[in-house]
Length: 206
Image (cartoon, rainbow, N blue to C red; front, side, top):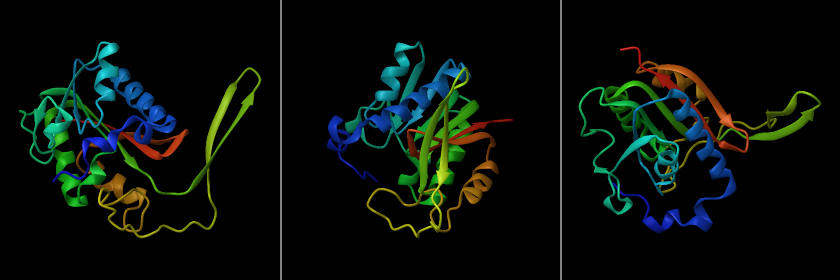
């Protein structure tokens, strides 16, 4: 079911500097995998596909909303592709727009149609303070300091997100355990310039 209109992705209100930082990580993670064909689920503004094409990546997109002009119109929980069609499949800040059980079903579909890797990002609600300092001959050191006395909050559906990482009943440990049952997790991390976005890189061993 469509949650937001195309106007939601207007440049001034959607593509702030923090989101651009996340787009850099999207590209960095996919480029490092050296895939020949990539599928993006939920393309949003199309920034990832358009930027990736400038670096030689062949990206196709699928979305339930034809107004976003995806290459294919279809459901994330029933992808219209054969098994192992793509070298890498990605979904950035998308799965939380589905109820949790549906998000897991969509992730299974992503794993089904990839030959090797799945890359996703999810909102992480755990409160942190980003810090940076520079050491001579070493460079800039970035780290995130958890805010003290910040207990997990219950999640209330806001018209878009059904759940978020580190909300009550959706701990990082639970997310990792549930998704790792479907596909092996290689790493997870939060973006320093945008800690709300947490990346997960999975590798299929089928």
